[in-house]
Length: 336
Image (cartoon, rainbow, N blue to C red; front, side):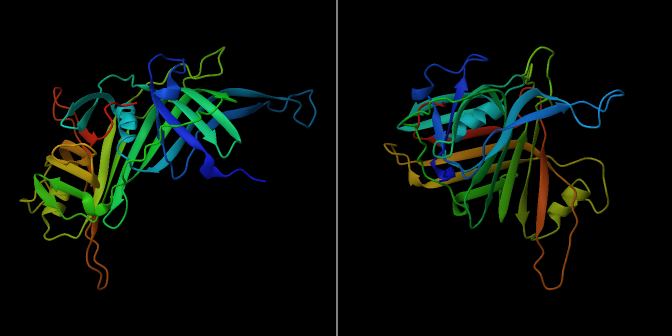
């Protein structure tokens, strides 16, 4: 008899103290439904090189230092997503008014980001792990016009303990899903007729800081943050192409400066937040004050309608303005 993957569970909570699994985790967490994914070990079997005076066969082996990492793939639900957003960006504030909970998540300039504690039950009883000092290294969001808003979170954890007792009644996020018909993009305050979009946040955590005398990573420090993405459009004119390749849409030959304009991605559910007055949809709004488009080519082919995947890079406007801001409105008053 095998173990069903679908019977597993993954629970997250922001971890207050480094190295310590939260005592109240069972009642203060969010349980995310996943499409796939688990954390796996990064560990080498240490074997020796051949030695003069030794035999032709490997005589022994030891286990080296270890960390854990992996990707969780999921349909985006807006009561659990803020926990991952806070972990990948760094800071969140929450407010409640007229039945609507508003969570504002902004990037931190610190290289130390919030740790997550994770409970991971693999299959229908194969194994249950607890992780401490886990960080969200990458977060990817994407959607197509005729599909769901989906996400992938890439995590790195310092320590794992096996044989844990799984939480009997997980606090599942059963909030509504989001589809492409309820997603809008604006570029420079003008509606963008995009067929799809993708957004990536990458903290570039250093994941090889092992120390003598320890099995575990000594530190998890975020390096340069990258916020980037793409959208697919059928061009109505050559303005985007000129802006990406020449620098501005007015030029007819290459320049050196880039045009930097605001991109806003708004995604909402069909369903209203229970008890909201007036009735309000659950939503996520991602605002990037300045993006620069990456150069791309126009690629006609036969009788195909010309489409382009346009990549962009977010730029920090100034020291006092965040590179991006995410506002989530949902039915949960807190971020786990």
